[in-house]
Structure formats: C-alpha cells, structure tokens
Image (cartoon, rainbow, N blue to C red; front, side, top):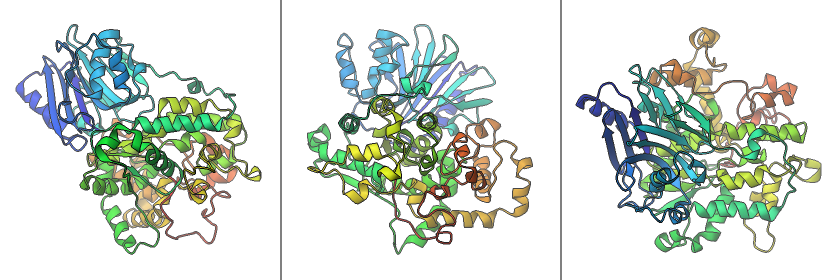
Length: 552
C-alpha cells in the first residue's frame, strides 16, 4: 500500500503552503516508507508516499504520461497492467510500474476507463491541459480514500483521514466503485455489476466454475517483486488462500524470484504461555490502533488489534505483501446469523448489503492495520470477476441447511472438496465459522470488555446520549473506543465516517429482525448468534475459554 494526498484550488500557493502539504503527506509515511514524491502545479498539489511492491527501482510517484501533461498519484495494484499495455502500444512507458497505465489510459480514453482496471486502487489524476482532475476508488473499497473541502474552496483527497481532517472544514469517505470529476463536480458510480441491484439470481451452482474463478483470483495476486506471505488464521478462508497460492506458486513469476516456499503467519494460539502478556500488549496498543484504523466500530477494533501487532512482526521479517481471506463471509453468507435467514431472497439481499459495506469494516481493517507498518494486504475473495461468479449463483445453494449437511459457506467448501487431490484436510474444510475478532481467542474479547469496564463508569454510560448524540455508544467497551477516537479526530465529519445501528454477530440492522431474541443481545461477537454458535453466550455457563485462531 501507498499513501496519496492531493489538493486542488488552493488560494495560498506560497512556499509555506507547499511545506504544509509535505507535512500532511508525512502523516501517511507509514503506508509508504520507501520513497516520497510531490508534484505542484500552480494551485494544485499531488503527493505520494511509496511502498515499492512492483518495479521497486523505477516506479516512484507521481507518475506521468509522455509529455508530463497528465500526472497521477496512485495507491494500489493493477493486476492486468500487462494486458492493458498491449492496448496502449502507441504510448511510451517510462517505468515498469503497474500503475503507470492509468495516465496513458486517461490520455487514450478520457474519463471512461476506470472499469478497465482489474485491481485494488485509489488514485487522483490531474490534466494540466485544462486543469481538470478526477479521483476514483476500486469497486469494493479495498483501498481507502477520503475527500474533503477547505474553507478557501479547495478540494482534497487522501488515503487516510488524518492527512486532511485538520485542514478541511468537511470531509467524507469516498464511495467505492465511484469516480469524481471536476468537470461535472460530483461523484458517479463506474462499477455497475448485476448483483448491485440485489435482484435474486438464478444461475445453477457449478463447483468447478467457482473453484477455477477463485484460483484465478489468487494467481493474479502473486504479482510481486518483493517477498510475500499469507495471513493464515486456521479457518476456511485464509486456509483456502494459502492452499491455492501454494499449489500455483511454482507457475508464477514470483517463483522465479522467491522460490516455492510459501511463508504463512498466524496469531492467537490456544494454550500459549504468552497469552496473558499478549493480551496486555494488545490493550496497550489500542490507542495506536484506533489512530491508524480511524474508526470507533467495536468489531473492527477488536479484530484490528491482533492484525496490527502481527503486521509489525511480519514487516520486521522482511515481508512486504501478504494475501488474506477477507470478503468470503459477505459473499457466501458465512456469518453465523445467516442460519436464521428466512428465505433465499433475504439471504441474497443481506449478502449484497454486506459487500456494499465492506469498505467501512473488513476492508478498512485489513488495509489500515497492515499499512500501519508498511505492509500490503491483498484479498483474492474480493476479485471483481470472482464476485461476479459467486453472486450470480442462485442463493438457494448458499442457504444453510443442517439437515442436508450444508453448513455455512457449503458451496465454497464443496468446490474445494477434491478427494483425489485435496486442497485442505476435512477438519479445516468443514470447520464452524469463527469471526476474526473471536478466533484470536474469546479471552481477548472478554479482556477488552473487562478493561473498558474499569475505564468507563456507569454514570458516563448513562449520559452517553448527551456526550455523543451521533452513534451513541451503548456499552462501556464502545464508549471507551469512542473517547480514544474523539481525541484524535474531534470533528463531526470524522464521527460521520463511522457507521452505526444495531448488529448481532456482525449483521446489518435489517438482519437483526430475523430473530426476536437477538434484539436483546446486540453484540458483534459471533457468540451473540444464540442458538447457532457452539460457544454462544449463555451456553456452557458463558464460555470464557481461550478459543483457537480461526475463521478469518
């Protein structure tokens, strides 16, 4: 991951303003510690903090077209850049960077090229010929992007809120799958897949089609010029990523540079003698975690903390990129509350809602908690083509049917249940879902709650509606996170970037209606799925055991 900052229409074009832009860009240096770049053009600035993954020697940014009339600053990876270069043979490329194609695509096709990009990206592009500019974000919002407005009429874009919150009067999270054009002055959606309408599809389930689509998604993410690995949780999704990557690594370009040994990393081992110390380390890191991930959402903070700590260790070992398993639960209805979906129509609509909200939760966590240490996370399940295949399947195949032996994500498990050449052992392939924040150990969640109870009094929670009228915290844990967030991001615009509403086991507010008992047990932990989770709250006397790392 890299860090980008762009400002257009500044009234003040002095050296002091340039210095301020550089200062703000430095707030993103954790995202890109390898190199810094800045292009200034009258009242416009495009800054970049680089994490070099592809073409480390010549791909510094901002990037340009041949005559440098088009400037672009990019955060992300364009997996099909070689194929796109074939369509741009009349253009001269200056670097081997996968992101340089963006400048030339704009020169060739104008603003209507973003759908051609296969990857994860946020970028800002300036056309000096008419001083127009565009900004765009990838389909699902894997990479973060914020947009803001200054009192002087300036327009700002940044990878993280911390780079613009002090200098903008208003700001917001840039919508995924959208493009902003200065020519029209507004956002429009460039990503328009069939599933976005939430109409129920009817394509029959084909296990091999689904398997091949996922294998293709993993293979294209092996594009790297630096050492890489896999975040392995022990659950289904990350295990499948590791299994597919391991099986196809020898045929990839990465094999020529780094060999066939696949590095895997995990956290939260059951029975670890260092468990108590690790829990304390996690609690000590909470303020730093919230500063980096820029949210006060309870589930996101619970899951981000171990990922944040693990990312530091991974980076210290010389690894700069990891594959991860985010997105599967949203696509296949893997969260345990999907057991209570009343019919296939509501099941499908909930998966659509979950995918549309990923940029506010799991994508935010995976990106920012790793980028805090200059580590890039790639997520094969959120490949555009794979999502199209998976979301076109008749949702009756995704429905959970215990009597028929179909647990959550059965169609994915079945697709990789190869008897002759197994991808995974059966006990991993058919293991019950654990949310990432639960999987690192139930004691981690309980420890967070105990810590928050010591910091927040009953009186503080009673008066929470007066102190925090927007998205009022309803638990001491949520209140505690909110106080930390407000310390770093005190503006109302910052508060509004975080979603609210009731949730059980990571559901949307709509899905809470599926079971009347859930409204009395609103907790984002998977254990809140009463009657579904084997260690649900109230089962076995409020289970407090240290659960194994699983399910991410």
